[in-house]
Image 1 (tube, rainbow, N blue to C red):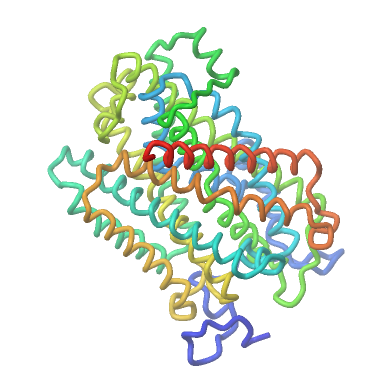
Image 2 (cartoon, one colour; image 1 turned 135 degrees about the vertical axis):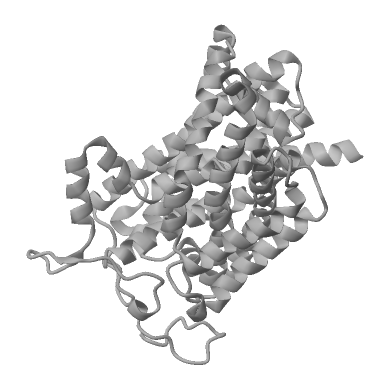
Length: 471
């Protein structure tokens, strides 16, 4: 219906969606058998003709989400963990991969089946106050993460200028650049622009090899979990879990899947018939590959920091320059440049997702219209949330906290915010009335349940140790 889901800040009814998009709708074709207009068939045919490169280009939300997961917060956290505990937390990359894939697959499954974002799906099933508390926790964690990531991007530019332009003078320009791109372009444009810079992170693979790690210790640490009941270790574990299994990715995955449906003209406002088995299979492959991509980089960042820093007595990374030294074996004097390019690329991918996922969650909670494809004039509330989150992130940096530690604490905040949200997502996925034939299978529910248990226990242990240390 035309007036449905109107933004309350608008005084006039919204025009048709085709007239308010930042870019034209993609060309479509009519399916002679079904009469359904589709856009994905051409892309799949082109992908087959192009081979492996075409296949990668055809991947969707899963790959984008996976790339965004390796944000500056993750880089800072993995560097800090590797330098502080050596190989001790290498196992987390292998351990979290199936759990991370199961969660993102479930979020995508919910979106494809219901045709709505995660915030709307949660509102339909659970009490408003409970969902509101989860979204508030998400927004707070996102803003902390956003502020730290803005600082990291600014530090990256400072490293590129060899310190000629200081980080503090770059915070506002970086924030305005990101905000401007959000206001006037789509996220796909941002992704296409900066995704290649993230390839700089693969330098950690070569750095880890050239640092000559202890192979025996590496194998044991990869496949045999090591645990310590010390405050520092539990804090590091929560930080790794928080930056890997981040709440903002849950909302972004679901939102991206709904966006794909809308682009393919398969999502009607009044009616959505669910998802086919073929659609689930395509989504599952996309998510699995995206999550695999997202976990390769963290493993080698920890390994490079362990072999290049911890093994040489550097056990506390407190600056970007120190974190960059993990790349010294492969990059030498260019280590800071490679580190800076990786941080800038991942930062420009992650910051819009952090503010955007917060805006999507809030607008879905209030049942309002808004997404990155719409012009700001027709979704002032949505873009207002983005602007407010960015402004708070900028204000945080005026305190002048050191960037690496801020990134680490941002990961801890995400780890503490995730457990309750995971419980609600698990219940959604198991709801046969809502999910029908797309209800999650036992393996998926087991993995998501295990993740929820692990993150809950880790967060509770951290809080108990924190309280105990003050008594």
